[in-house]
Length: 413
Image (tube, rainbow, N blue to C red; front, side, top):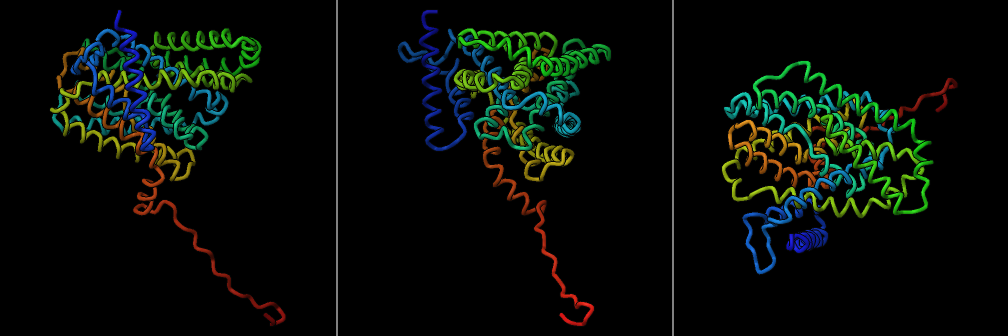
């Protein structure tokens, strides 16, 4: 306990230094936060009073990282509103279904082609299907793309993925941990997740006038306490009914975006989003041991290639179904290509079920590559789309019609 504050200070300084480096070379800070987390940890040295192993503070850093995910998704929800999202309900359902089917099928095929048993195939498919909500949220905000036409679809797919995750974890837990899974249990889990999300959005939208009155508080201290209490209560309750706490935070943001206090909330939450968000990516890197990744290199690289192909195809089809332009559709696939916290959860489930040990280093390296590659691809999406368009000719230039002079009835002209 004596060294905990010192270790937290050391972690924050390391994060700040790599953040400064990233800003100097004009690169996304996310990969730098993850890599500095990987560079330290249990395998790192202790120099005098500076303990780079972070033994005493590991759990606290992980907890603050969880708060970071909540703030990232909450802030992203504030950038939208319930009304704006619900207008796109049908296209989101279609786009989300397309995205899940393509990526899940490719994940299963990849596991089968590499000779894995059925249970391991199912875990691999889960690892390669679900995007990282935290990374996607961070990238959208950092690149100022929350107002882009494709962002509604991206948000919708993230929420759709969570419904799939609630169902899939139920199925996978039954298969891996107890060798059985009842259809009733799966349907109940899915209905809880979907019902809670829809009910919360509908009630939240109707409650906007009431929330306006309740939040009409002069004191910033009391205002912030009320917002934080609401955020943590809903996020925590979401977790109890198998809806990811991050999605609960997103829902709170969507509801509060309907109130007249949205700008005030946004302004006050910004420092917490940035501070705790940085700690999330650092803690994520801290959980990866680079010394254990060697045996899964080729398997991870193959999965990355499959995921990139699947995301681009799924993004193009999802965007087309919503009537978006080819450029916006390409942005969907490139933005949600990052994998993160949910993929690690899948790998941990495999470990708990006594499946092949290769799943752990495979998931860690696969997630690391896409966590680094995802923000870069999103940032350079315009250049990537230009290259793809040169091949597939999505934006065909309109050739102006030639005008033919017509003689008038008098014979003149």
